[in-house]
Length: 543
Image 1 (cartoon, rainbow, N blue to C red):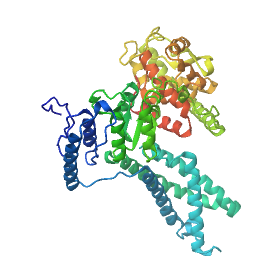
Image 2: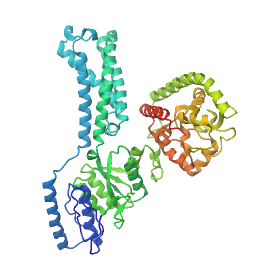
Image 3: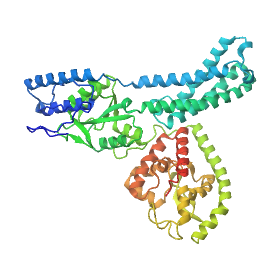
Image 4: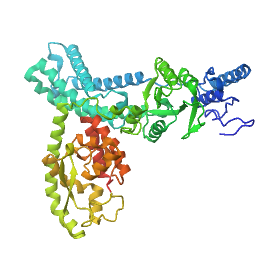
């Protein structure tokens, strides 16, 4: 950045060649920022629509000539690079999955007596048998990925979700596979269990490696989708910060479109463009793939009209709340405005299959947790007492499902009489020496398996709070009481994403994660939480 003479404003130099593109008029400065952000792709000059920001015909012609020369120079020095479209990525994903499965299928169905798959003696013949296996495999895989949504692009771009969803799809595929084989072979399908388990053992690591490599490729900076945020306000700045903070953002933010036309030149280190002409210039020249709307339709209908016009050209137009939610994994309560329904699930109906999974998970963990508690209690009880004489367990009333109260159990980790007061923070002097170890490993929560067995709690869900806290926090945010619509959990989305809350503000941030979990809870999200919880315990991330 440098200050030009003659009262000209600071402009961003072209990042590829270090050449500043300068204009003497405000409207043209915004167009030249568009050149700078595009780096390689240069924009033709858009005609000014705001009379107050117009410029003379002579200045316009002179500027066009200079831009044409810069465009010609850049086209000679740097070839244009096109990013793969979402459709192309989806096609690569489908073909890659298919190649992995078919290659393994060919390897396994190759005649081998010990696999029991020698098709030489089949009445269908060798080729017909192989085609039958191929059809059954692809049909089963198609059903599985449609259920798990494993071939959605947002899933494929995640280093954790992509292989996890693929593995779940693989298991489902084998279940469907066995059902389809039963139609052909009846009880003889039992003979295929060995080969299919061998197929699973080979496919699981290979498919996971392929999915991780693809996710890394999708997240390469040069392949990320380019976006502009329409609206310089708190909502737009929040989503920009979340995208900049994300480890693997799927979107690069080029800047803001200032709806007022008289905003700052930069906001949060991102350039600010002015008016609908700048939005049109960015879109028509292929510099953006996504338009994030952070303003209300009634506030500026002209900008919305321009965004809808660009949507007809294939550019995604999405509300700021949707981008914030998908990027951060929490509901943006501060920015949903009148769209309060976005904080709730689309329907209150919960799948019976998910309820069965949830109940089976609670029962399995409750029984295994009781066994672990019985093994560790003779060791931990004397350590807790010798470090700080007093009761071994700590019991406290908490608000549970639909507001019903219950007594939650924990191993005592603080000095006698110290628990139950103010918020607990890192390095809290009330925590005993043994208590620090218990909190770091989350072993202080182990007695809550008794609450899970009794049905007061679930393994996964929002953490239970004291009834008094719930009443006070509900006054700060009306959505807080909605946490009570599901059973509280031993671990949860807020726990693995944010950790312990040390203040009322922290609890309101965790509320946004809890609402996201309630809205999106599913088998696969539960598995993600369990994997992250294991990582938290192994890495001693407790207080």
